[in-house]
Image (cartoon, rainbow, N blue to C red; front, side, top):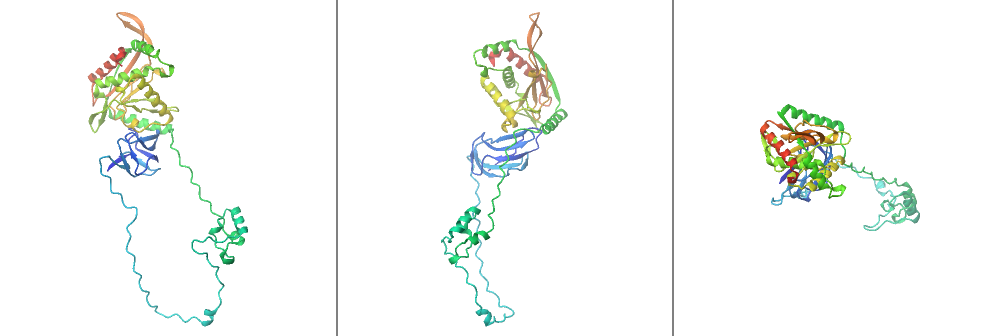
Length: 410
């Protein structure tokens, strides 16, 4: 038996509210299946399970606020023996033996003969078991008008039949309470709570992490020329954006310098099992979120472009999955479309590094001893000095520049 707990959807998350279950006990699930919806101050997230199995028990109910690491459900892996389910029928206790009634301490006085002989009004005979009671036509019509089931009434007419008077005297039917429809998970977010969460995470980062910063200026001329040629063969909806080149170059550089791709946990660096890059997305109405695109280094550029469009759309619509929030191993923030020349990024714990890119702008640049105008980009790195140093960071920045100068390698 294995346990599925409330995942941490960010360093600033303390607990989450279970909005709804998508599965039930006995459901078979596969890795990546959505099993629940959880709401945090960043909005509602679909919680997906991390391996195959069968849900054995749901341990939290809709509406419960569960702390990070708190038990949500138990499940059985394919090779595990299922837990012995308790019987749905409780064990029956032996029937009690009727005790003999004790003799009364005092004898009751005899009932007078007159009282015993007093005539009693005859009770209307009850209909036989399985026999429907008789209902007079007038009573049936009136019962239909009042919404009463006449066959549930006790008749006072001949042979126990239900009369019009019985229907008129019956209490009005009680309408069943209509339960309000279940609340749909909130797909938006609370800007004030999100700002508090971001402030808590960034304060922790600047307080706990010894940052060091590096930056370089990259000539984007070769990359933009390659991009123009590539996009010329595609319809507008499938064309690539420069951001995709930055993402892919970052992912390949992390493959060369894996010391920056991982987490600082319990005083040690733990490398990530894949290059899962969190892309910082500004949300409408304020706020910021950085869900992951998985295995960026293995994606071809058109596939990566589709993944980026999908991620941004779902982030702003409130349709992200928990796996996209729990395992970004590195973050990229790009503010070029906001007119920013350069970025000095802050690490999102427990990650150990973050890259920032400014806008691509034409500036004077020296080429072969001559001053010329080139499209330039400032790339920055913020890294954790506990996990790496300037030498490692320098190798990473140099790898990004080398890849962007030779875009065919992307």
